Image (spheres, rainbow, N blue to C red):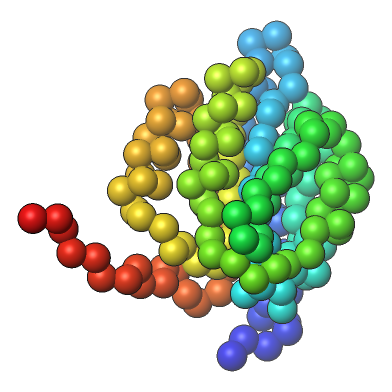
Length: 179
């Protein structure tokens, strides 16, 4: 098991990498417009033990992003039984942090497909430049998620997926093909 110092160093490295990526990314709009980012989180019960620390690290990342300027963010999260919510678009890191601290973790299965469908719908309304997703498991059809990710790619939306913990994918129940 990793000790607190190792976790803190990894978190610091993650913030540094995020900030460096922002610095080296060209501004999103040809006219210097603001970038639009969907920040999606798995808020199921398995993430509860690290939720507060994750919110702190993510808050630091967006505070630094605000300092660099030009980013509107929408928080999307899923938890519980078929609950997937999205916030309004916010332009200040403090507003995003205030939204994040109101979220609590609840038992339920992953709903990554709902996050991707939401991102596709938002991108069709007005360009979304990127989606960042953080979760600790995937309990869904890889084919379904692959199809949705492909649709997002065709819309020009970049996706950054971060896995927390040691359970990359929980096995799906065995299903026989018809016939």
